[in-house]
Length: 378
Image (cartoon, rainbow, N blue to C red; front, top):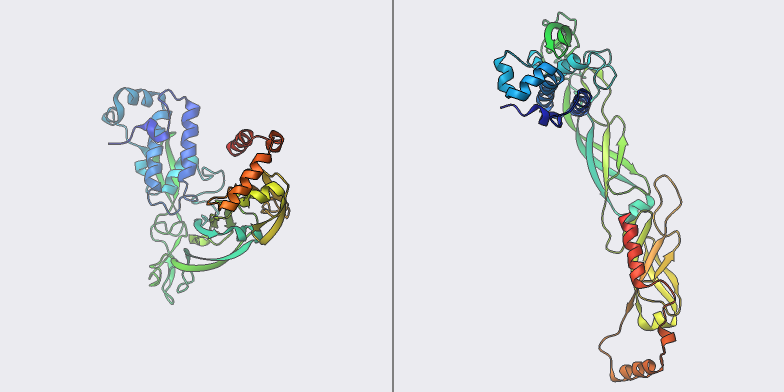
């Protein structure tokens, strides 16, 4: 049973003409072979979308469908025009002409189809984000067959005019479309527009002229890259039939978590443990950065949760040399398992402390917490 036409196009049942057209063109772009070259279901998905558009773009046909559904249409003699086409390219030409859904030359035009893109993923650490890195990636891509040099013929055998299209590379057929019957010129399904075929197909690629081969490539990861960003390597995707331009390779970068730091844009955030005595007296504290240890000054009376900064010890912004900061939050350690002498000393200290000693001159912990939560929500 065919899916509901409104569901296929993602529309409400009261959608107007412009909404129907817009939804269909959006789907057409998503299903275009330049985007979905490796999706074996692209043709069927487009046929389904094309049939839904045919139904909903014709007011009379839509009215019948709204009342009686698919069965009502077919009992009245309706047949989808997509049934007259043998390939996804033919269907796109029927709806959008030689210009294609993207506005450029499409199937059967003067420009050969472009090869498909390939996406792979790599993982790096924060140190590679800081300094940049070169990673070796391995993947499989469709490339020109070395045995036949891409012409699809067994070496030493001739390439002859296509018997189906007599060397024209195109076929003419009368087809029904949403715009009435048209004389449609389509790419020959035997020679795929080349006009020539191999008399004896190449044994290495079965006459396709292309085959899947392993690839190894060094990819430069720039400093400052963020988790999930992609790097485009032009021309290193799948080769195209008919001499078209190859697709591109997209390398998605994942940044491993680091137990020492949390990344906040260009800044790195960490925590340093400070004994209560050092927090009260002030002094120096050693903290770790991505490039080793550094020393920060601790003011007398430093409170738990206060922030220190190591300027320029964070990460660079992509494409720029200026770096963020290392933000260090203080965790004051309260001593446990006191000896008798230690307890006596603390009791003597406690007896000498006044309200002035405990006065907090800065931001309260609650306000600091609210500020941090607002910052991360933004």
